[in-house]
Image (cartoon, rainbow, N blue to C red; front, side, top):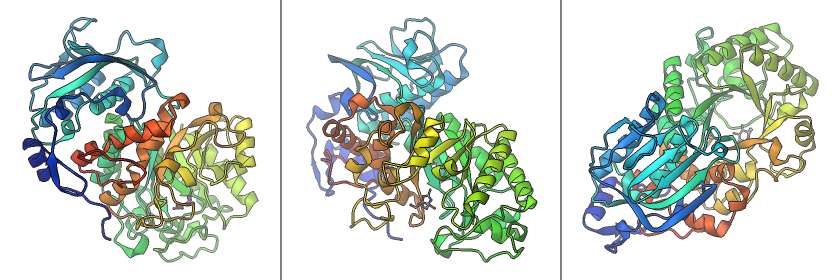
Length: 538
Ligand code: NGO
């Protein structure tokens, strides 16, 4: 498939920076004002918008060859976040940026990442950031807060800081005081690796990209009609046969358990928790094709490479089905440190409603027995959700009485309205990738809703957070993924992180467009939405 948009190589950019030229969107080099690189990025350019940020005008900290990174003494987590920050900045700055344990509680130089002295309100994921001419000091209650602060700090540096090769600098960070914490605890991205399979390296790159916008969950849609993508020791044919194809008939693929562990560990190093999904009882043709005993008539269907939905079902009346689910979910639970197992549950059109409810209720018990919490697509509210079960809303209306009723009874809702949050929807009629069954979603539509007040009868206290799903019927490569996720994913992560009071399209579209030069330097193949005014270098 042809890759839409452009993907400009780094050499052109390096040349532009070293010659004092900026590359415009049409590829023509234009003079870069001498002072531009020295002007610090304002706090108003950070995505997601911090809860509070008070700039100190005229003050800046300069990262120089003398800058050291000091981390909380005795904290291996803080030390590795320090190493991560140094690893990000060493290639572009060329500075040594040594990382060591902080010596006092009131640092007077360098960049400090401390787990003491944060205001109580920052919680488990928030942080305080103070930038003066002499130092940068981050304080958080938990390492996740330090990691979030590092993402803010990255965005306060010139875009060239993201380069993999040495750049001239300078490297100012605007002075100011930030106290920041998320509105919702769960901010996720979903990648469908079933319709098309993506190698570990692609998933890692996507993890790095979503981390920059403070996502803290990665939901992997690991099975569907067209492919089973994780090796299960007790049922090897799921991966070797069920994983052998993809939409359109390509070769498919699957993660070994070591691959999956590698993804989980990499995500954890970015403070992202993996949520594995095994979709059931529908969306199961790949499993049924692999093991005939999972069908009611005992006949395995052929592998499927089309894009229809709703035709397959595990046999809900057979005990062997539940033995299978127990074995599969048991292995996945053992590989997954995070709290959630996603059981799908969507579009079970080939299962009778009563059978569906009984099935979901039983699978909830299996998941609980493996010590995990269920997430299901919101169809699961048609069963009897356990108090802990999370319903992921994927509808296209702002009214859903079954979901609202469940929320009133205590069910938490994860918001992924398909006409706002689905990254596989086309931007407009000219977008070559993606689908349009839920409508077109340009950035303004992706940003223009309030997760805490969107669904009638589902108030903010019932909302666990926001997730941006990317289904991959038409998506086959990393550039495709990037093109659909950027710039919409940062918009959705801002809805999940930033206080409702910051919601303002006019201000948002400026800070979002300010990310363009950063994506350019990072080599992200993003969509240049005409709803934004992209700055030079985007
Ligand atoms: C639906 C369907 C998926 C499709 C997706 C495409 C859900 C939850 N089930 O979303 O199987 O891939 O739309 O947009």
